[in-house]
Length: 56
Image 1: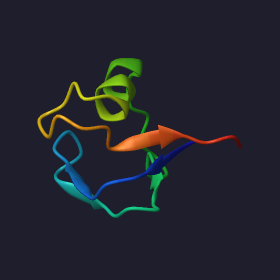
Image 2: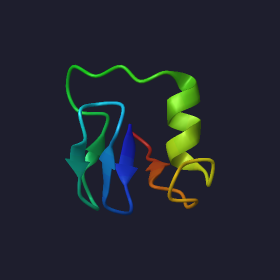
Image 3: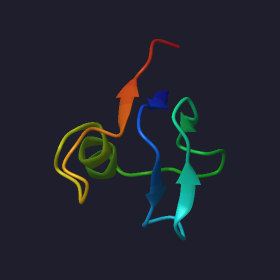
């Protein structure tokens, strides 16, 4: 499970908004490992990590 740390709109999910504190991904969405890496690092449009892994 991942937790959103900075607000973003997921451009690969019809611009779905994610607020800080939300769980990523939403129920029913299965992002690729590449997408998770992109959002969890600075390798995205914003250039900052947007999510972080949480212990379940």
